[in-house]
Image (cartoon, rainbow, N blue to C red):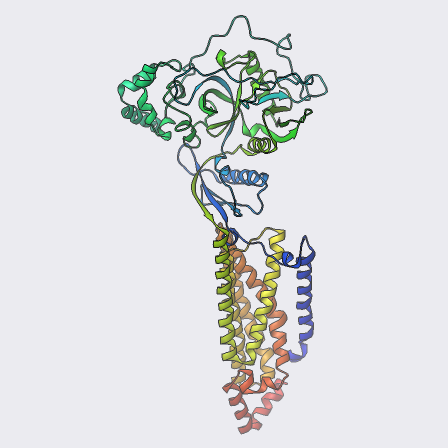
Length: 633
């Protein structure tokens, strides 16, 4: 049989490794890279190294049970789209456990205030409006708006003081499609009817059956405000402006937002001491999420009584901010599936003031408002002055930023779940730089300790260890820069920890190889012939040990979330690249060293007493050793 060393071509293997370096760093410098050399070699750093903000959003459900994994994943996708739509770079949105979503935004001025407001989007007709500031004065009439195309440029926009938007049909080519209005009556521009509709009371809608939790919570609120105040509030059929009545209802002003949320919509609307700023706007997320129930929401200090939701955010196909023909910023809105039919039916109902009719005080030109409700707040309430059968526009006192923000809320606000901020933390860039410095120092100390041990114990062989670690570090760094640019992998403190742990894995493979080499020499083989034989036997152990580390990293990556994934990815990647260096550098370079005189020197090679004992045995029993050497040759 041909000896193993005759089949070895170390030069070829080292050339393959050099080729890998050339390809990798060509990708680093030219594949999607821009800027200076320093910029091209800059890895993508995580939030804990560059600073930023992190928020944990907790999903809430009506029954208190964790949401389905499908709903949580869909909510994560939509939140990620909303974050990206704001122009936030390098944001991270991940699920954590069975009900949490973690949003991380790098940068010194990272703002997560709008992210926490993501919840269900609903379109509801406005039935009535009253004052929500706690002042017992009659509210002013609803601001004017327009819902018809206005090519003549006549003033149909709302007063600048209100900023009230209007919903209009996107001008089309004519007919009843393509965004043109479909007249609901033979009169194209109707006015208020001669016989006004009776003003609806705030108790017109039947109350939904109560759950045990809601009933118990209302009992607790009744006990807190007292029987007299509760009876007075229950007797109200409309908002009261009488100071004496307001005084009797004063205990309701001390209720917490979560206590107000359990009251009926009629009581929330009619009681003047229940205010927007301190109570209604601060209700828990999802307080008005039920589509089949009336709801109360606020805008601009006004308290709005809203009808059941006829259109939801899941019906929205797209919403974009754009300039109209007059150069004003508007939000173009279109619907998907049967959403367009729902929207047309809702605008017809608002245009004709049919169904649950609107109070006359809320009307402008005889038409109702339609509120766009995101979670517990109204983000827009345009008046509909036509039946919209196609794409629509929301216009008003918008600028580029506000129109883009509204478009993003309409486009990405339709989450299947509601969320409450469970935790938020902010990391300064200075603190992140300190963490990065500490991580690099820890990695440097670990590498230095391995090098000191290698040179002290293995001497010349320690050079092989150090060179192998340097080459592994070069491969890891190149892969880190390239993957950060291509798939968004970020280096975090956990990732640095993974790389440091991989140093121990690499050191283990050295120990296995070199100790196996000593065993071969102890068995009587020459140092040169012991190198390939030690490699053949140590190789299986090295592959098995590294395979276990890789499998552990893969399992950890699959089952973990957040920064732990970064640790697992870094550990697995470093271990794989270490195997590349083992096969393409460590064994070939050891084969080359075996042919040098230094390798045969006990003082230089690091084999020490093993070589001295081998030399003594050769001198004492040359004939005994000769047959074995001949056989090995």
